[in-house]
Image 1 (cartoon, rainbow over the protein chains, first blue to last red):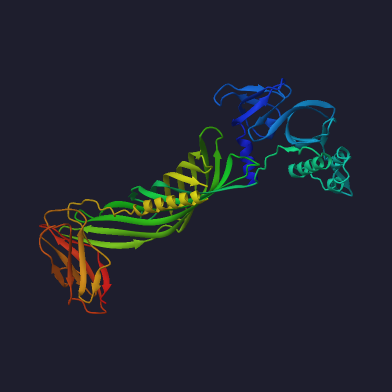
Image 2: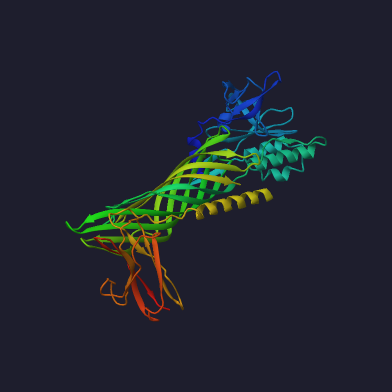
Length: 398
Length: 131
């Protein structure tokens, strides 16, 4: 799931996502508006600002403004970094504001944490990895030089030194250590932690219901391929689980949906046996089926109604099936009726679904969605039987 | 949380009501003759067995209608016991309760029929065991 989310996340990173926020000018003015949220890499390089979501974009590079912040979210500050003899200006994400400040940024190669002791210079916490070959065997070796940097920076606090040996280059570990250091050495104010706790996994359960137009087609079947079946208008009810990892992407969700529907298909075939005898064949099929859908949704970031695209695999399981063929033999003076029963369809078939719709967040945090969906399943081993459906669905999610 | 549960309850009730309301009748196409059918399962008690027939398409030239039954083969008028219920389409359905025609424990094959000036139309055959 994580890999899929990352792959999709990178594919769709070109979408704009203007969120409420503000920037601070070099003259310390605060200008409120909307700032494009594009992920850690782009956020460290540029601040695309609009006074209103539909107004023109103004782009700021690091140094042109002091910093910017999303409302109740990430806070970026303009800093100049010396790294490998190179000077670069970046917007660093402010993680901890204390006696020592902690920042974070990401580029195409790696994640970086930057420490700024009070009155000191910015230090990148690094962990060089080298591979050593000995007797034909490769050994990976990590420098852990960031531990030495932490020990030097927090050198005036003996209490924290043992913990620094176990420090890791992660948000959680470094935020904890920097704020603990602040608490040890500062008697006055508490430090500010800007990092918002983002859940690893967000789960939304919802109920869905709607109506669908289902079609049945015996493309290749000895007995029934000449029948044209009328489409069936069916009710559809279901339960859906949306799984999303906001740390990877807020726009991509894995969806698991189970749906139940029941259909009635009618097909007719007139079969002239001779000049005087005609067979009238009526087929009535009543079935109920449970569908299991596993797929992904991409939710566009803008607007009150947020467009959603999705698709995935589909498993269709027939729960109940009744097929009756009524044959009326029309002879010159008499008509006989016979009824035959059959079950030409397999209990389980596979296919796919695609959907397009919109999602609306309700004032109390839950949301509703509306989808147009297409389902397709097929049996192709000896016979070829296709079922498809177009449906419109409403859902209510917690 | 209470509000959330009440939302779920309301929606669940709505869609189950919605589903129940969507049972569909079988489709019967018009032909150039009246289409006749027999209803199953048939009701039976100590007083007898109730046979019910129905016209699936409307025609106004019904000269006779009724039921015919047998214990061993396909029931056909003239070779099997029958009961005539007379002329006319009526309201589209017809029924009769028979008390002595069926022996307890025997399996019977029964079908409805209708006659027009030119045609004799038989329904499908259904079977039952007399309780």
